[in-house]
Length: 125
Image (cartoon, rainbow, N blue to C red; front, top):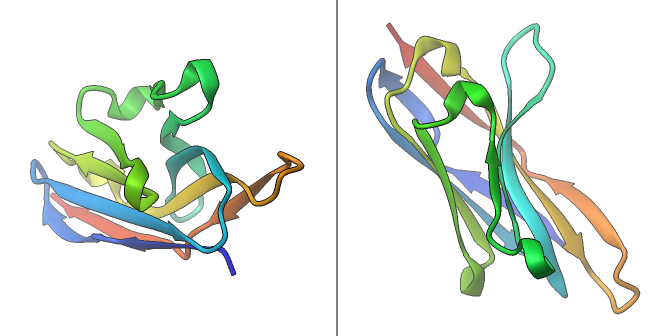
């Protein structure tokens, strides 16, 4: 069974740093992309950062404007893991952070979207 497991959330003061990790496990043929979304109370889930792992776009990243220059997404292909280094955290970064991955599970190359269970990040002022 394929699953994504996040870790690394917690409580931090404004200006501090946290590093989130997400591990994908199961019978995965290929990872097309992995990324992080977040959802604050009363808000819609939004993309934070994503890294592509497919063909000519391999390694390409994109970030929400609100986190550019503060957050960095990276990956470890050998371990099927993705990381989010969050620096200069602000109270408005407080949210539940979800790992997301586009995974190919068979030779038909169909992509399926998987989500982690979420990890809470709280930034105090």
